Amino acid sequence: MAEAVSEQRIRVVQLVQHVSLGGGTLLAMLLAERLDPNRYEVLLAAGSQAGSEGSLLEEMRRRGIQVELLPSLQRSPHPWRDLRAVLELRRLLKRQRPHIVHTHGSKPKLLLPWAARGQAATVRIAHIHGWEWHPAGSPLTRSLLTTGSRVGVTSYDALVTTSEALRHQGLERGVGRPDQYQVIRPGIDLRKFSPSGRDEARQLIRAELGLPMDAFVVISVMRLGPQKAPLDLIAAAESVAARRDDIRFLVVGGGPLEQAVRNEVTARALSDQVLLLGPRRDVAALLKASDLFVLTSRWEPLGIVYLEAAAVGLPCVGTNVDGAPEAVEEGATGYLVEPGEPRAVAAHQKAQEFSEEHFVAQIEGLYHRLLARRGIG
Image 1: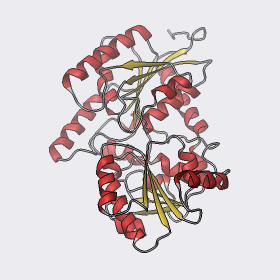
Image 2: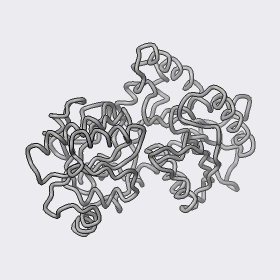
Image 3: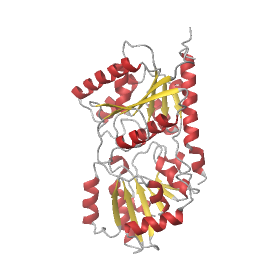
């Protein structure tokens, strides 16, 4: 017999591994805000850690999102903390009794099946923003992570990937069944990321940063970690700066390699050409003030920032990896080169397919179908 929820809203938990600035956390926030409030009651549960990328916790609360912190949940492996995180999550699930748990990131995807064991059946969705075996350094580690992924997703009703490339990679390694997968590309705010206001942003941002109005400004927005290969960008900047003195590079973001990047800028005598801005929340204005967007990723599930750059009218240069070709239309919105080649890196319409409204509507459609399978109407 179907469970009637007409007199109560469908309870949804969006589960993320930290409150740091990042794509998965931002998408969970978007869903917490934009899912139909007449139908859904959304709680965002998150690990309390915030690294050098910056914390989104205060912004979550300012935007009226219901947030519950799980103090032991963190990104990196830690057996005892992970066990405590399972217990914290288990208590939350018993109290909330959600109809849907929607995880974002590798750690929540791994811990949820353990936390939910023996509890009432709940729709489980794992949102794959990137496979965990990518950062692994050795074949043994990649094999162990792949095995963990295979085992961990068996209890999930759906695996949502941000690109066709991620879906193909998962199936190629035997992770999940074809019928579990759904490709739903992330959405961007096309009101904020649009060509309008570029002249004003150019004046204001360049004055703030002390950039000449006639400089050619190249911008990169990234987490300063191994995935994005920021040192490749600095090498490319040195190559270009040697040939023209009117060029400036803006690097937006923080992360574990931030000090290494700063050291490299100093060692290559690029302090006048490369500005390291740290984490910023005015990315739209910074993109509008620039002339070219560049990303040097070694692996890239999709690259939301490619879409944001295209939406404001910036041409893009990126690396031909994973889902990047689905975000950058070669020869139309930008160009893709092979990763790890700084010299090659030196060398609006697409974004309309990726609106926030379209993304949220697709997620709501998925929720509806999965609830119907469970007899929740």
